[in-house]
Length: 98
Length: 500
Image (cartoon, rainbow over all chains, first blue to last red; front, top):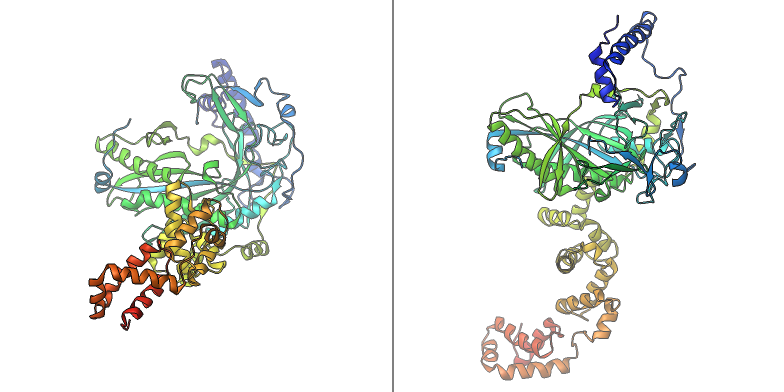
């Protein structure tokens, strides 16, 4: 079994500001452990001689010229927001870094 | 308010170690990962598109100009440029980033292992080692509403403007800076000033600190003298003026010293700087890097900086500010002290422009460091903002050289120019300020002065040439300063039949 325990899940939940019950924490610890174990099987075929990759296609330097393109109006930008005020998104006060 | 020791006492007992993270906003036309405009001061949420808002299914694209600007910053900081580097997601939960992560770089920054030679106010050079400079994006701007104080504590809700979200940033991180001692606060200010000067000179950032184009997080730790290992550090966030950087480092050194003296331990945390009280308050405990759950950005491919690309960018670099200063000092023939005063007054460009417009270096310095600076101080503005152009200085000097006005009148002409009365020549004409060069008129004044001071006239005749000053003074008084003192002197000696 992978080393994902209940405390790890509680910590991740706290970082993501997700409220989880004790039952959910227990269940998720088990499920995440299974997922991590499954992914781990990749290391059986990819040894230290295989560099880590984040992209399946060996591309580099896909760059965009610095030219202004598509932009939304404030109304469009806010159209999907649950709450807005004075042209800005309105969100609950979250106490963290200023 | 936390307890503090005096700065001298703190330095007597402890050896400060500094570290800086300076964020530089690039002045590209578009954002780092989207083609929305990068413009300061527009109406909220008018410079955003779906990518900036983190909508589902969108794909980021890397701004080529921003990469080139980042490489230029790396080169100007004497860094190595990574042959290949990648982007990473840095996760945190806060409404200033709608994606819940910031696209940044983690293990392989685009520039690393550099240094910057920082010049202190007395000319001492202090080398600051650069750990890395990496590319990332800025976050949106929150305004906390409600509550009693308007600060985040006690706020009822926050309003978010994402115009700044996605603006290209380069974060420059130093290695720990040891050995600054009592000059640590001064070095802090000089370092940030040097970084700002470099990015401004490169033309890659507007570098306006009051707009947040250059922002500094200052790390401070103390250790007993002679100990190798560093003490626990605090990180004072977003210190956004040069003066504040100096004060914040000074304050944190004094605070740390008091905590250590009391036998307590420094808490590793972020601190908030307060300009009004010139002190810091506790922020949040510093997250371990693991808490950001960095992982490679799967939507972006690596940036490969080929030697050809890097060299072509290096060829575009302007003359570094420090080298330019050396060259100008030599060209202008100023002493170290004279030149440092000019630099500290921030008048190098003005003097340069004035010399380029045709004035001598000595005259340019005389005007900018003298009468113009003095009037600017009275008006409480920057000398450059006073409205004196290089052409005005050149014209004043040529009017003096031609004998049309003297130094005293030139100052009055400058007042006229600043009052909007036109060019120096026009002011001379309008105010009738030209020196009296008509020998007949001068002779009458001289005869009068000699008659009122017969004793002095006798002394001069007897060989006491220096006494002529009293007669010259009398003539200047009669002519209301509008006489050429040199000519007056000649005429007096001639009248008395004495050889000057």
